[in-house]
Amino acid sequence: MSRDSWIGVTFTSRRGWDHLETLVDVGDRMAGSEGERRAAEATRDALSDTGARDAHLEEFEIQGWERGTSGIAAGEETVATERSWDCLALPRSPAGEASGELVDLGYGLPEDFEADLSGKVVVCSSTVPDYYERFIHRREKYYRAVQAGASAFVFENHVEGCLAPTGSVGTADSPIGDVPAVGVSSELGSRLLRRFEGEQVTVSVDCTYETATSQNVHAVLGPDTDEEVLVTSHVDAHDIAEGAMDNGAGTAMVVELASALAMREEELDTAVRFVAFGAEEVGLVGSEYAADRMALDDVKAILNCDGVVGGRTLSGFTHGFDDLDAVIRETAERFDHPVKTNPQQGPHSDHWPFVLEGGVPSVHFMSESEDRGRGWGHTRADTLDKLDVRDLREQAVLLTDLTVRLADGETTLARQSRDEIIDALEREDQAAGLRITGDLP
Image (cartoon, rainbow, N blue to C red; front, side):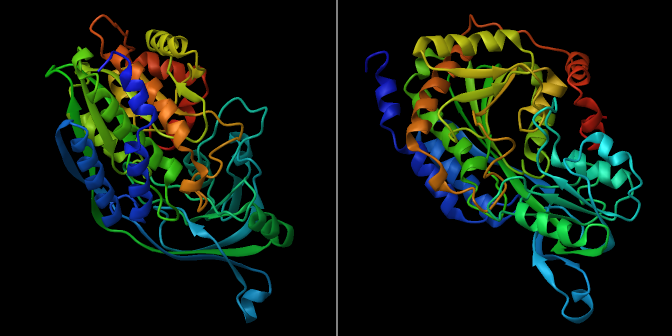
């Protein structure tokens, strides 16, 4: 095989795409479900089939959660006909009912929660305005509402199309949230506020929660070294859709990269560990479990695939790791293909426990998008038809080359201390939100 023949093989490969089809056809891959386990087992077998060794599952306990029905009742109709609208409970919402005055908090910026919200049902958009300097995560908005005394939380999608959004609440210390939480479509949110803002409404959530089991998938290629480069994704997805973009595509990419790197295994100076984490969507539980058990000083770098393939151009958070950014530019220049990077902190995917606690040089790759927020993600529209096999193949070529560069013995990557990471979060105005959600002690 010639030195670069792996490129042609990868650009005609069906391995990653076939695995993506396997994952979306599993059905419900909610953390702790039987579907998540079947997807993990299929990923283990797919990695083994590439030639990666020691493919296995690593099990751990989590707080399970299963949805029932949910609704919002309002107006005079509640007396006679109990008019209600379909909506989605946010995973790890507590079960029960809560009533209160319906209040529109718009984008749900930090200053919007300074009002007296005691006993109110608050509605917040899933996005922030164009002028705002940072993304505000759903959980930050939820816990700001909780701290302000709200009785319930309504998360309104900013994307049109009658798509109610999902996404978990809860913290590591208290996995089940404090007040009922639901997601509603842009259209339903508009209707509720038009008719009932300032009036009493009742949010109801029916769900069950008990201890469940999730699992991380591991496999290795390259020499048997203590030092490792991690190539990661998460295999779980929300229960309302196929989870094609979030994050079947990322796990399919990990499988495709294992296949390509198996052709270049002799070039690897450092072991490459593939990890498809479980229970990412309910608080990075699988990656925190793994990070607690790994010698973080031995993790040279992490290439995390979460949100790839949704567009042609890769974009990655590089967390101020300048050496890592330079290696990414080398790959982009070799292939004359744009790869965009953002030096800010990106604390909302599975690389983060390794960055915060170990200062591990890490990049979180996704696809560049002109849309704000998740787009189709976290809705029923996260389906396979939104993705293109060409994008998977092109990005696999780039990420294979990048992984080989990261595993090169001559590649040195400076680490950062925990204090340096926290200082960066403070400068970027992210620290306060992470403390509110319990993600930054």
